[in-house]
Length: 116
Image (cartoon, rainbow, N blue to C red; front, side, top):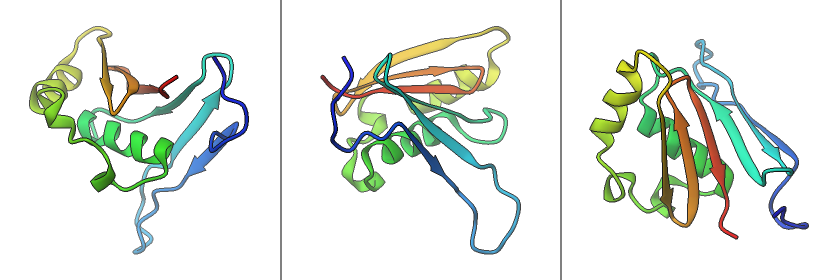
């Protein structure tokens, strides 16, 4: 069910550019009103899955990492990172964190669904 009004924009762009001007991957967070979910991508070879998930959640919630339930309280982050990084075929992991549904894929896709 799509949210009416509120903090959910139809699309947000997040730039994770370091202050020193070095090359960094631009992360794009988009909202899909049909599925009421936010999507972003990351490179499992360059960024740990657990860090990418926390980054996506802080972007969706417009908060700092300190405001989130620790990811390691929900699942084994080392096992998640290893599973996604070493997958030879497409692997998807689905779980809940702070009431949000999270789907992460070994292809580097993260989907976050807000609580209803």
